[in-house]
Length: 363
Image 1 (cartoon, one colour):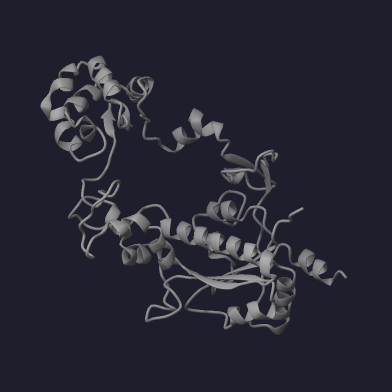
Image 2 (cartoon, one colour; image 1 turned 90 degrees about the vertical axis):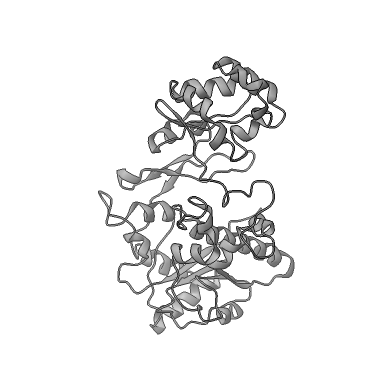
């Protein structure tokens, strides 16, 4: 029977308030910490160690002796002076993942990065806005998420290797390297190191910004797939645009609705009709004919959407502030596994020191 790996995390930042994610937003009612911290740390335990203290360094070593995985993320401006690669050697079965911003070599090594800095260096700012316009930061924390996913993948690979060899691993994951890896086909489509792009699904930096179609109460998507010309034709007939079906300008019909920038030059007839319809009316007509159309959702609509509810995305958090009593859960579970829908709240700083130290003292 497999057991879950025992994880430790070291975050070394110059603050007396612990993990700086506690301050990423106003404190929620009933807590001194931000909602983001509560979401990222539910079910964990907390012990705060001063790594400049010999006693606390010894406690860290005792923790690592029983751990499977150690994640390390330190402030480049105030590192702990611990050689984490050597730490991995001192604990041969331990998997150590050290996270940094810009890499560990070169003139940017040791400099603090940011979401904007790394997006700019990786060229991700090329994918938002209009061609020739000002580069824009992707609003989502895509660099942080990419780094977390690559750290997770590296740890899983190291644990699989340990099953075969009995040896742990030390490896680094940089935020810059992670987001570069996310570009994959985008890099492959660039020829000669220029901004010329060729290939399917790679016209984002060339076409105007991709937006929805305006209805009387919002915006919707509008698409019929390749091979669905007959369905598109029935749709045109249903909304009084049957004349488009035989119009030579609409022979390449799909480029006028979705796949191509001709929707900006030939989409006028659709837009005129859509302006008189609701999002629900447009989407139902398209979907009933086998196409795909959804309303652009706001926060409340996302959580109230029937399709979203079927995924059971929310879990309950026990013994925590009301404002974070329901949170987004893990999007998968194993076949036959009972869905876990209740988690322990995020810990207060150093909350579990006594319990953890007592466990270390047990024979």
